[in-house]
Length: 437
Image 1 (cartoon, helix red, strand yellow):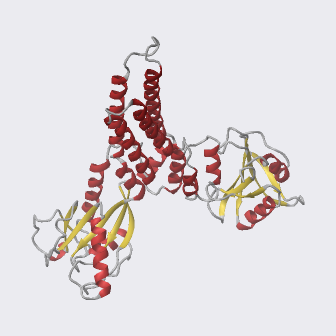
Image 2 (tube, rainbow, N blue to C red):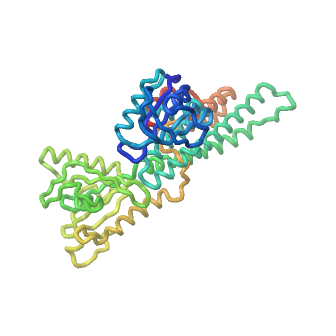
Image 3 (cartoon, rainbow, N blue to C red):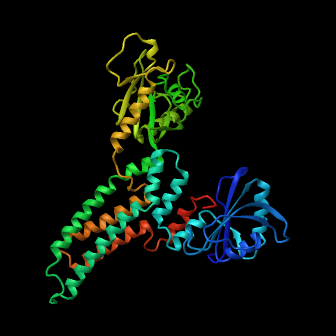
């Protein structure tokens, strides 16, 4: 499979003004000769007519060639920039498929070859996938930091410190009487390992921020029936997502929309009104509402100011903001609410968006983007930290065993970047990519 030459559409789906078809593998030069007549000068766009094996023209466009190893995949790579019609692409793919040893790429296969040829590590690959899928400014910043190797550099430096510490301890064990070996390096080594443990602990504590930036900040709207929850969801989404009526219990499931507030992805959830329900369907809706409220990053507790009812147990939900609704129906403002709004007049809604943005900014503002953002990062870092802690704390254990714990810690760091054997992870990671990447 790795010896095959692969091709795929690497731009948006047709129809489009221009489509980019990428080719990579050992037969790339032969493919260019067959389709375009010759191999263009490296990294120079050349205008060519693309032809079938019967010399019939398919289309005219730009052809670029990137010789190995200085290409995205580390192999010979070509890009054909042609008109993006379905008919043109179908004809080109048919011509490519007729060439022996050439096939359509699988999901993420170009990036996988880049990884296997040492052009990218796993963190950079994941950052690239996140950059392709980024929808908000903060997602873009996080993905750029990862795809550019910022996070990899941190983990590589930590692995280097672990390796150096192991080397010094092993030198002391093997050559205790040699003049070239610093005497009693243990104090220096363990002091540095204690500092490294502190660095990893602090870094791991930022993982929740990375996951929220990447996957979204969960804001759940809760309250009693008819408190205005669905109306608020529709107003913030600027479309009718939820059915709004005066009948209590209309919302019976958790509804969700995505918002962009100050560059952060906000996942806004509308929930069923909390009350003692008798209908089985509404009872299930209330149960799901309580689960959503429990898992929320922020709860908007809506209270109808014309009938201020707070369901049992909801006021203690943390963190939460108490929002008085139907402001247009009351004459006097009250201090018991963090904010008062009216979805009918729009009064207070800009302040509500600003309040959500300020809460997120206080939590995550000023953080470096070189932070973990996936569950597998957290898992490996936690295991690395546990092994390092075992090496530091077990002072009554012989040095060989403590050094082995340091080796295990370094291995878990290597699993994040792919510096050690991670074959079982590759299929999962690269399956997230589109075909042409």
